[in-house]
Length: 275
Image (tube, rainbow, N blue to C red; front, side):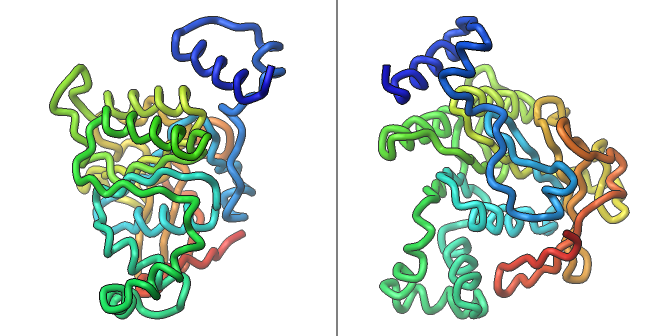
């Protein structure tokens, strides 16, 4: 039986809740639990991997560079990606990715993209492994439909799904009525699609960080389902990323252990400090 058919059958069985022998699952090919390519040595050395079939949170207060980290991640990882950018509009993302590629300030690339869209299109043609949704308040059904459409159009499920940001996902209808429910639903999507789902979320501004906030700063009990939770802090051009929860590697719930990057916001670039 062709491999693609076997994987599709496995997915249907998992969705239907049909049990299966582990040996049979392994022979078919396991996607969930396999790591995506490591982008940063500092993450790799601490066991901070992005596993398929799981949810990961990148959390912090407004302005802590969550989107900057995620754009650098998807740009460097180079795997089939579905990116829900409901907190940044098209031109913000375009200008930042142009700046990363050209070394020209994002304020200038924004203007040039408007004046010369052909130039901007040529520069960005090398990032076609990412598909973007800029719906401002996607529902959970919208996200599910986009995942299915990705599979239909490109012949495979996304390996990476980014939801940026949790607070703008619409849960006003249906059985999902809060942030914890949304993360639980996204965990289901991760398991059914085999994708790693990375979610940007906000933390309480009333919980101090040193510089990164602890796991307890997460809002609305959203830390139950993710296999890894990162809290971020940006201070004087330095981005700090702390693994406050990590099921398969190093973690420090206090947020006092972190990796660091130098940040150049004008060029939308991160420079790893500690490998």
